[in-house]
Amino acid sequence: MSIEVKNMSHIYMPGTPFESAALVDVNLQLHEGEFVGLIGHTGSGKSTLVQHLNGLLKPTSGTLFVYDVELTKKDADMKFVRSRVGLVFQYPEHQLFEETVEADVAFGPKNMGLGGEELTACVKEAIQRVGLDYEAVRNRSPFELSGGQRRRVAIAGVIAMNPKFLILDEPTAGLDPQGRDELLELVQDLNKSGTGILMITHSMDDIARVADRILVIDKGRIVMDGTPGEVFSHVEELEAIGLDVPETSRLRMLLEKEGIELPSDIFTAEEAASYLCKLMGGGSHA
Image (tube, rainbow, N blue to C red):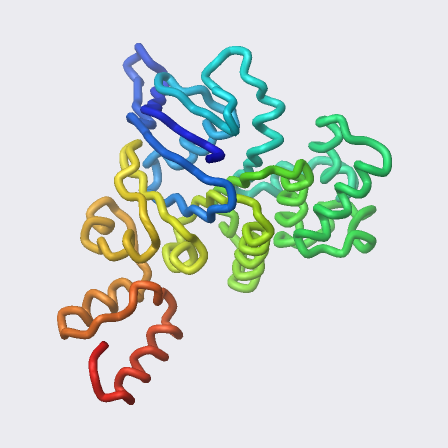
């Protein structure tokens, strides 16, 4: 496995009147090549959890292994860990700072020791992998690009370090529908090429469509872990902790009351409509 969390807790400002438990006894395994969604209401502990996974935060208690490196040890090889697990923050384009796109994307791999033709090839590949024309953007200021393009440049700067696992915190936040769809397609392509993905999102319809597995966190605890079909079958439980569900999950629940079973792998309105039309045409319930 790539990442293993054992009985991990994190307390902010311990021993003060403002002490707050952000994570409580979390146990979790993430495997290379998986596409995992992480959902939870605001303040549930999502961002705190992912910041532990490449060493930005240290747990108050418990253990954490990333590619067999125990991050809780003082001599943990953080350079190795961060070369394996890349973290893309929400609105990553706000972190761009170099004069050109090429220089910005090169920053991470250069700090890892790459140089010369190897660095150039690495940067070119990363820019092309996020769907941008290398020759067209390499010498442009990232601040001249559109919002969606700047976000792609920021992601390119992370994947230029060739991580085996990529963590994205609300990567589609603030994008228009076209930009959102294009970015989700990019993330799916990265996953298909072998990169493990852990994605935080508030869009239940999006994550139901793209993830292999979904984790639900509430009050610092992992309360559900399963396939999209398994997790989103718990409509009432999810709503009780302040989460929405895909519209098809609501439809599925209503249809079940009428004795009609909608397959668990259907998560879009188009798929549901197509299935129901075939069902009605066939004249029998599934």
